[in-house]
Length: 593
Image (cartoon, rainbow, N blue to C red; front, side, top):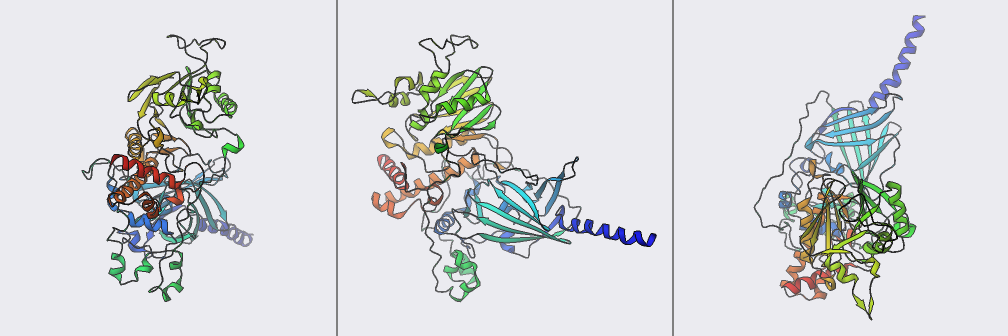
């Protein structure tokens, strides 16, 4: 009988051993025999060899200045998930178990360098909607394919393909295959970026099992590293970076080979590297595309930003909703014709009366719902916060607050007729730098930002909730509209972006903390605004330099000062094209030169 049991026990033990070999949980020491220079001291400037980048990314890398990392908004940024594993760091891998079912809910990883902690959900949950925030580690879901753990990651913040300036956009996604073979762990990554890559970027990383590691915390505090004038963003103007050929010179390589492009990924390129030109894939101007187009569906979706502050998306422009015991406050009301849907979405969250509407500008997609939503609200009467005027009263309706410039635009007359119905006009205006309010136990500051997108822009700061609603001075999906006819300017736009950064405070590793609701697009944080600010400042500096050279508007456009950002933010269609943006920057700077 004992002879029968022993083989049976051995057979039962075999699957357990196999499972232990496949499961990546444990502690691992990095093997740096692959790509050691990149993963150690750092890659050489100008080394784009073997990267499937397009012309836009090549120009971004050529323009990059390492001094950018001394800016306070950059100092404590970790490597993003697609690059963190490349660091000179060991790895800890562990899992969460559902105690009732004993199923794995999630895996977690920690990379020792910068203590980058990541979650890989294994319970089948969906990825967040498009308007949800992006993070350095993104949102990852995993599944087992045989003895290989396959992970798919979305919602990554903008990062880099290589940390010498080669950019990776926030539209990138990543597929990973984690493979364990006894005491070795291999990660195989595939990065797809429709903005900057012409083919998938593929790379691998290896670790060796090393239990009982000691991994220290990695605190980071922002400091003043360089005393530079406020507003300066380090970068090289196109054609001025003298460092990008050092890599080729040092290793006696053909410069063309070091310039990268998909063709340099393959062995055949070596036969023609000396004469081949850098990959000339055009920097395609992509029109902004969204998987979900709210203006066509009419669907209004509510997404909690923090506390009792929500984003209502789908109304043409973003609407910020704050509610509590005293009622409802809205920042912007969306475009006309969809207000009933907006009201229905509000009523799914609260039955409290709508008391305050705040206009961030006079743009139709931001104030189009003023009349209908105002009528559905109620003005707070006198000093009694619990009593509202009757719906039948001549003064019934919510109060609409805006910068005085908004009232001037909405009340303007053409052919002796008002541009906008009286019912949609602001009921209160202000001219000062800011207006303070207190509503639902929260300080709310209306920050007037002159001469930015227009001359009537207002940024709204919900201080206790720690949420900023920006209107169209910040739109992470497109170049900003600089409306010269309504008092906008490029320098005012940059000043507005810097003011947003002034009032935002990031949490750990330059992520989260104060959340930012832009005029259009997804929920952001300070790092996202800083990236956008950097881009607009760099483009401003390029156009300014061309003006100083005496270039005409057509010559400036021909120089393509936005080329490296066009695939993400540019468009040749619609009401605001890349050419229109460049012209607005040019004319704005000419007016002040």
